[in-house]
Length: 251
Image (cartoon, rainbow, N blue to C red):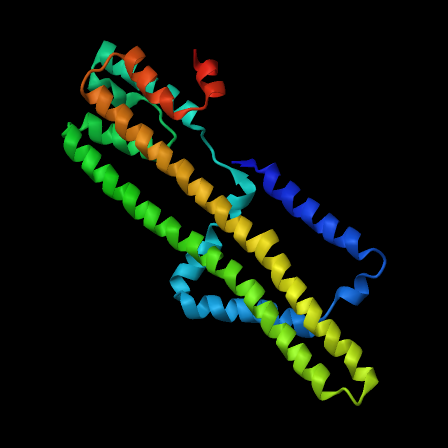
């Protein structure tokens, strides 16, 4: 996979903006107590809401946030049309020798060569798509819940700081640190939620949508091959999934 520059740019720009606002007083914006409340509370909340297997699976796909998907739908369509041309000229059994790198398309073509009924193949792939979407949904929901917990835990930190402040009004030296903890906890919660976990969840949703499109293209394309649809007509029907720019590139 290629490196996804947009994720890195977003994180860097966000970090630079925050550091720029802090100026030369970065030390004033550090609070161990606020960090423990927000990050610790976020972790605790996540482990309570989800089981350990779901958490480990979601953490395992974080690398996708920094990588562009291997294949664009345009490339999948090109492979399907190529298979359609081969099947039309040499027969479906000839597809057994075609080198296909995409695992979804490869599996579908294998079933196609084995003579699986088109309706059953679609039903089978539809179930696989649904299960994949369910797995991805867990990860997206997890990050959404973390986005909700971040500001909430920041508010908890603020309340703790305010309690400390109010209980030490007679001690001027304690008022400053207590107020700092109160305000920084809110800031940390907002930053973690809006700059990290919520954007991560949205991006994972986009990647899930991308994979769903691949599945739909493969199902429609392989079914067209099995029915002997003209490759040119099949291509025209599949490119409806592409943007106008990518459609023009295939003309």
